[in-house]
Image 1 (cartoon, helix red, strand yellow):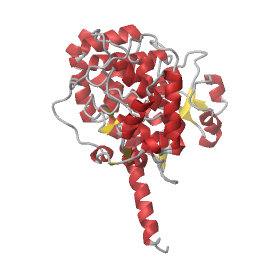
Image 2 (cartoon, one colour; image 1 turned 180 degrees about the vertical axis):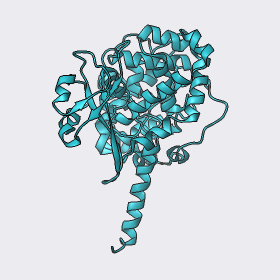
Image 3 (cartoon, rainbow, N blue to C red; image 1 turned 30 degrees about the vertical axis):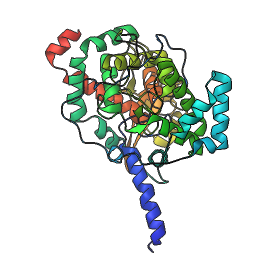
Image 4 (tube, rainbow, N blue to C red; image 1 turned 120 degrees about the horizontal axis):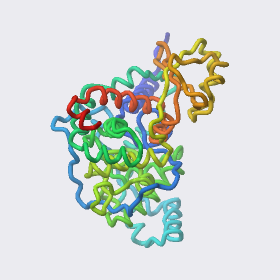
Length: 398
């Protein structure tokens, strides 16, 4: 086969590098991407909310003593360049809209945009995987269900046992699920992101057309949050997509779902593990978590082609066992009559695809991050944490 021209090889190498970075990301930031990205935009009213006032100086929240190795994406420091956002017509229109609808001071907001820089790295990390890139559930799972997250998760759980227990009791979400999500997102606060949130959100709002509408909404939410909490929008740091704190909440999710769970009158997802734990539980409950309900069941697929319509039906659970059987899909487990399910495929590159039957609570986890891989990794890490809990801690939990 003839070799590609040097320029083509360079472009292909850059594309592959971006795909590798995306597949390695351990934290959440944007709904709809396939490799660990955060909270979905649809959001019913929060059950338990307080005015989101953040602590002025974040403290390390029960961080593990040993820092795990960073992914390739984290090792690449944010690259920003000077920008002149106030001179751009679309930014001026955005500012006028914020003035008209929310009463912002036009000159002050333009001055904030004048201090904002273009986060070039954010745009690169947002690029979709190249055509032909084959995902592997086994490889993805191995990055999250691994010794560091299990060890540090058990430590985090023990250090925050009261908060985890209270959150589980109040919102009905299992303790291990709460701990697992924070572990998958940021390794319990170790990797919360180095991008200025204002830079990331502004760049993706005005220099990334593919998701501009979504990020402009989050930029609006962030500016409202900054005004409510009284901090400079240029002060906060987060993921390349603008997600913040131990649980990597997007600004809209902070305003809708975050709670003051430590009772100090302020919501602090960056420095308070207790607030982070309660807020994750609040998010899942607000999206319909069913206390005591299953996340999934094992699936047996007789023929992948025959089962394809069940996969294509999507992730919201709509099919009961009898309907799934029409597609040659069964389960070795007993499924309650009337339980609505979805057929979830977890590809393994050239190897056999793994399937599970997702129940309502699986669907709820995908509201935190729409990736099937993410949801299953959270569930599997939660199981590993539960099984690895020392007997004394388990007795205290019971």
